Image 1 (spheres, rainbow, N blue to C red):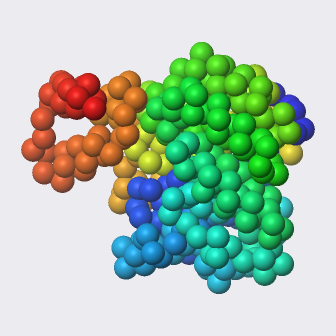
Image 2: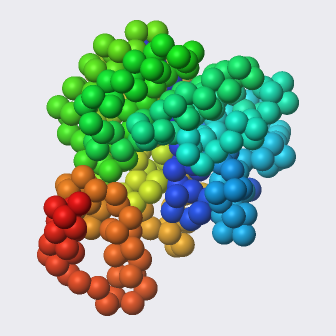
Length: 321
């Protein structure tokens, strides 16, 4: 589908960093940045700009903080055809960590928030736009949000910010196409002056399908990752998305090459993608953290309950909460 206002954002380093504490090598980040730039991707998210008060540099890699010197090392010498983005978590970031745009490699600050923290997200987004950046607000865990709370948050975002887009984030990979339709229409009803974005996880193998559904409903900011690399079951695969869009500006060859040479070798040290525990988490609309622990234990020692017991335990815990 060719629609010139569509913007494709690669989130491989940022979302993939949730699987390795953001400990990608500089070579890996440069390879991904170069490939996505050559391929015609519009936005490349190189990690988080989160506070060291919340994340220890002893535990987390450079891409959890995205200091300007590291961003320069990641991008120097590579033609800048795409906008560089970083993400701030509304509850784990500081406005002071964002420099004036004239002093930064970054073009877009994406603020991730739970609905309960929307005031913090608005403050961070306004801080970014006030310093010369474009900004988005990405509403996480949207499948758990109460209707009234979401309505109020969207009204605030429309009235109090000048962000370019507000994202629907299927954090738990639990949404179906009818849910996407409903949420897109709601966002469009409240956000008259903003674009809508979509960020899908793949617990039930619907990340790509749900992204297509959003595109059909005129969502123009689209997230994906190389080979679906991301937390747990991962994300909408960027290569599938580019193939669907059929925009002549895209060249999929650099994407295929970097998947083969840079992304697939990462599977030696970390696992992502569809499996049954992640499917169970998505089906039950719960955070994949317990499923990730289960998968780690299964890989490390094999001494875990079977799938049925895991499902029954997760279902019992979900009911109890």
